[in-house]
Length: 146
Image (cartoon, rainbow, N blue to C red; front, side, top):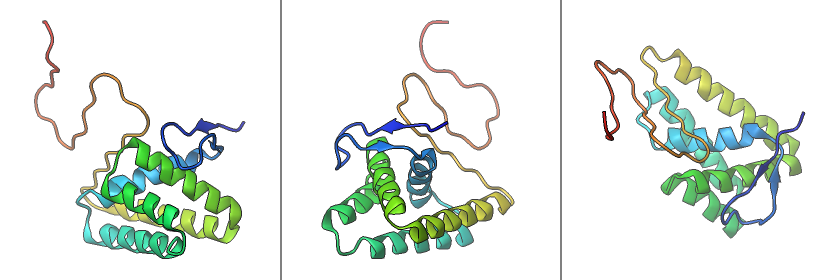
């Protein structure tokens, strides 16, 4: 079964459908990693991957802007636009697709192997309350009447 995601907001290519849920997850996760304090080995791998993306799209101003927007202003819309770009490039170039997926999987393994790893990733639209945390001792409450 193919899962399709419609591009919402200004995604560069209006009406583009994303058939690969991996790319939306990958883009959202990459953006989160790029803005999170990671262990040095993971940080280095994320920096390398962002350099590869910047180099890959260096001759296409629109694509460059998409990458930079996702990395400098992380939010669901910029991550979604990056996912559309990555999926389009992966379809165009299977070698890029394989290399990107391999690198991302490698970074996930580095993070998972960290002794005190915490990875908080939120993808999609959120309505209501949400918590991202490492260790919580005690309760959490979100306003309202008791």
